[in-house]
Image (cartoon, rainbow, N blue to C red; front, top):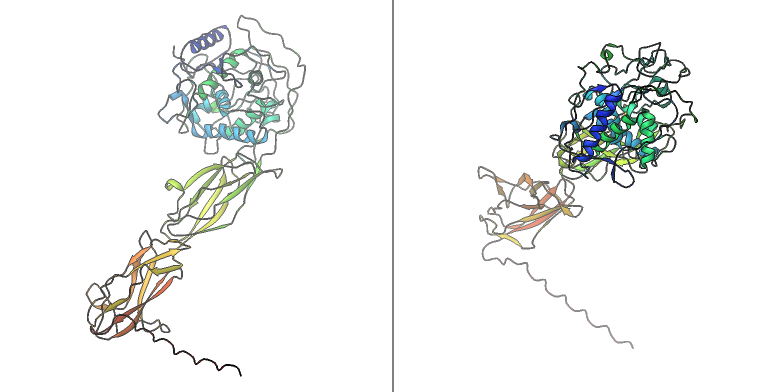
Length: 575
């Protein structure tokens, strides 16, 4: 059996029968069942009693299609699929990011709730087809409003206007609004500003997803407990069919999902006579915030029962939850050094570190932060990346991965920003300095000698180091100097040869190899005998001076032995 996705059906006997048959088929096939959050055992939806009060959607209709019988991954796994996975398992990138951000935000502020992002995705699938296949802008706002039918009691609940039409464009009755289908009166209590733009916008997927998550967690619920999970979903829409449909998509997404580009998600079928909603694309954009205080919401008329007739309205025994949501994220600040410095080709010792805080000044854990390398530079994060995302720890801080300096010297910027928010970013200055060595030495102690007019037979090898480690690619200057006191180039004595075999006594194009070693070109002697000095210097201050001896063939090549000192006369004995 293949479930036909996209058709939005009015609830009734026919829809319930379809959903029940599909659930039965899912259970009998390899499709995922619903999972006990506490045990992991497969089971169906319960007959939990919905909580009192008006549901989030005002009991508006929803997409009742169930997931396909072919699961996105083998049973019992939850690994994300590659981009080539099952089409229905693909969630538009911005929409998926909003669900995951909501999970992380709530995990930091209400860790006992255990709201999974897959549950938010399931509700978003049922309520708006993942915001109509991801038709949202870069900040997560739908390109046009998504509005439910007029809640005027004709086939749906009867809810008089509570927002003067600010959100839904209707000043007579309310309509469910946005990707998660909040009625305006519920949004007035639970609306969130999750993307930090200063607005609580039900048409923004970041704001709506966080608001939905907080509502599901209301009343100290632990969504890892099945009874709490069922009751939370029923609080969104008072329907056992709705509960079964959401749970089936919840389990489907837990088996595997993948990200698809915005605007390319599976779209609902809106061509049939029961398609919904109609005309929403032509309505004006809602105002950012409803004016005034919402009025009293009349009790909605419940939907028709599967067997016909209606259920009389009931008076809530307890008021709906009024838990005050925690303060939204307010700023990102620097938590480490403002300047980072590294030598070309080496790793930066310092890391760009930031701290995220909410409006109350408390640190926020598990908040994704994006680090970007900006500027004309070849410095990179691991894997050659110029951008990466990491989440804050329990103390609200997070450090960027290690940056490796390239060969291009100069400055660049590391920019840190809160994912999904429009808060001012924090910047760090990175500086790449030329390669250097703070020490250079010969690798042997052999005396360097040559006869007049001959070449030095010995090979001169040196090793450059920086802070004790081999210094690769460090420029080295070799100069045959006049004396230890006068470092100017000598005009006589040993010399190198240039490309035209002409004598030169200064070389500036030398560089150490990967192991820090450097082998000098051949050195030649002119007809002047004596002891001469070769000085090598590196960027970074490393210096070594080597003696070169030019001697006639019959002259000893080893330094003369110093005669022993004449013994002092013994002291006269004491009288």
